[in-house]
Structures are given as structure tokens and as C-alpha cells.
Image 1 (spheres, rainbow, N blue to C red):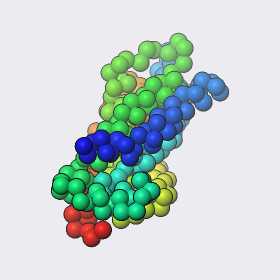
Image 2 (cartoon, helix red, strand yellow; image 1 turned 120 degrees about the vertical axis):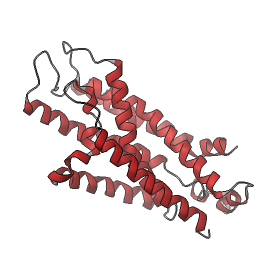
Image 3 (tube, rainbow, N blue to C red; image 1 turned 90 degrees about the horizontal axis):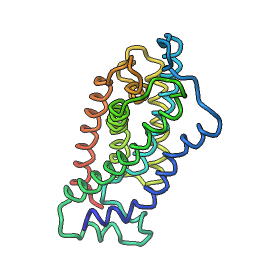
Amino acid sequence: MLWYKGWLETRFKVMFLLSFAVFPIVLTLAVGHHPTAGGQHAPTAAELAEAENWFGYFGMYYSIIPLFLAGSGIKTEYRSRKRGATYFTLSLPVSRFRLFATRAGLGMLESVGILAIAPYAIWVAFVEPGDPPVSLSNLFALWVSLSAGTSVFYFVGVLLSTFMHEVYRNWVSLFGVALLLALLSKVPLLAPLNVFRAMGLPLFPPHSIPWASMGFSLGVAAVLGFAALKIVQTREY
């Protein structure tokens, strides 16, 4: 029942975000391809740098999807537009841990499901006719790196949803993503942890899976999720 309840609360967001995820494909097909780091020749340092910059923009674009699907599973009043919806949720014969885990888990599953579109979008944007074919393993690696990289943004949204209205949470989250992108881009010491740039690297053979940035993202996400759970369990609604 909790899974179905969560789906009813998020289904319209999922439909909107599906179109949001497909938009880069439509835009790329309309205006043409950007220069690719692939090709029949070995990519130069300039080409790789240009591709990585574009990957950073793609990473920021797709990091928005988890932010809008995050939710604590407790504060549901603003979703239902009915007074007392949060108290109805709390009156259900389940623990707050289960409420939180179900809603957070559902949102994460919806996020990684929508992000399955992203590898195809990046492939359309960067791989031109005549380039070496991109293997399914590369596309899968790209999806894994995107899903792991955006997990930190999802749990930022989960944490903020425990005490902040959805409208304010979305604006604060978007500002935080932009600030993090600027910080990771400007500080050389943080380059290995730049989750934005790493979200597209597995697409091309010269790059390997960005384990460092993925581990950093998943580790911070776990800390944020634990903090959100503690807030949910101790807060008086």
C-alpha cells in the first residue's frame, strides 16, 4: 500500500521528468551534433577537455531529476492539497522508518529509471556518423555512473524535504547544485571528486568508470539519508 501511495503522489512528476529527460535528444537532433571526443582518430587533449565540459553541463541537467522526486514520506500535505494529509500518513499502522524507507526508495527507483534515457541522449549528442560504435557496456557504465553520481543530489532533496516546503526545497536544491558545480570546477584539488564531469566519462574508451567520484557521491548520500531518517524519527509534526 505504501508503494502505491507513493506512486500516486509522484506519478505526474515522473511523467513530466520523462519529457524533461528526452528534451536534450530532441534539441540535439534539431540543431545538430556537438563536437565529439570520439572519431576515427585518437582524441586530442582539447577535444577531451571540450567533451568533459559538455558532460559537466549534462551532469548538472540530469541532477535536477532526483531533486524533484525526493521526499521524506511524511510531509504529504502539500502533495494532496488537503488539510491533515500529513497526520493521516502518520496515523498509518507502520513505523516512521518504513514510511521514510518506502518513499525514499521509490523516488530513487524512479530517478534511476528516468536516468536510463540519459546515456542515449549523450550518445545522440556526442557520437556522430562514422565514429566507432558505442557498446552496450559503455552505455550501461554511463547509466551506472549517472545513477551513482546523482544519488547525492537525491538525498540532499530527501534531507531538505524533512523540514522544508517543497517549493522552497526545490529552489534551495537548485542553488546548491549550481554552487557545487562552480566549486568543483574551480578548485583543482576537488577535480577527482567532480561528479558532474564524471557522469559522462564512461562513454568513450579513453576513460574508465569514475570510481572515486561515485564512491564520494554514494558515501555522502548515505550520510544525508541517515541524517534525514533521524530527523523523521524525532520530529514532532
